[in-house]
Amino acid sequence: MPDRRSLPPMEAIEFAIEKVFRHFFFGLALAIAWAVLLIPLMALVWYFAFRNGMPDVKALPPAAMAAFGLLAIGLLLAAFSISANWNRRLLLGERPRGLAWLRLDGVVWRLMLGHVLLIVALGLYAAAAYSVVTFAAPSAAETLGSAAKPIAIVIAALLGLSALFTFYRLSSWLAGLAVADADYTLRTAWRSTAKNRIAYLSFTFWLLFSLAIAGALGAGAFFAQQSLPQPWVKPVAFGFIGLLAWLAIFLVASVAACHYRSFANQSKTENDTLFD
Image (cartoon, rainbow, N blue to C red; front, side, top):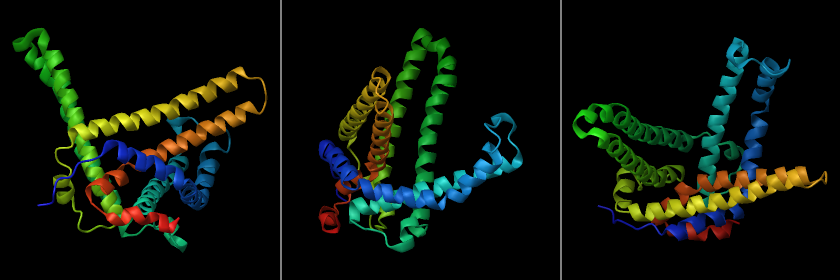
C-alpha cells in the first residue's frame, strides 16, 4: 500500500504560478502550432457559416453544422494534446521535437479516457445532488416539514465538496497519465491522496485568490480603457486582459501537475531547470 502524503497547498500553488510564467512562451508555441493546423477547419466554418454574415444559429445548414462539428473535434484534440505536452514540460522538462508538438499518441488517448472517467464521476455527484434537492426534499417535506429543504441543500453542498475532493484526487492521476508513469495507477493515486480534505480546501482558496487577483487586474484594465480618451489605451487594455485570461487558463491547466508532484514523489521534477 502506498504511503499517504500531504498536499502543501501554498507550495503547490506557487509551483503552478511559477511554471506558468516560466513556460509562457512554450505554451504559446503549443497553441500556435495547433492554430496553424486548424486553419483549414476554421476556413470551412467561415465559408459555410459566416461567408454571408452572421448565420441563424437555429437554422444552420447541414454543411455549416458539419464544419462546426469538425472544428469542435479538432479543438478537443488540440486541448488534450496541449495538456499532455504541458504536463510533460512541467513535470519532466520535456521539449517536443518535430511532430511531437502536435502529438496524438497513446499518451493523449489515455489522457482523454482518464478525463472521461473524471467527468463520469463528477456527473454522478451532480446527479445525486440534483436528485436530493429536486426529488428527495419534496418527498421528505411531509415528515420533516420546513426543515426538509435546508437539509437537502446541506446534503447537496456536501456532495459538491466530495466532488471537488474527487476532482483533485483524480487530477494527480491524470498528470501521471500525461507523463506515462505506469507506477502511479488510479488505485495508487486514490490511496496516496486520502485524508487531504483540509489541504484541498486550502489549495482551492489560494487558487481562487490567485484567479481573483487576475480578475481584479482585468477589471481595472477594462474600466481604464472606458475612462481614458487616448486611442492606444483600448488595444493595450484588451491585450492585457487577454494575457491575464491566457495565464489563468494555463494556471488551471497546471493543477494536475502540481498535485502529481506532491503525491507521486517524483524527484526528477525538481530538475527541469536543466531543460530551460
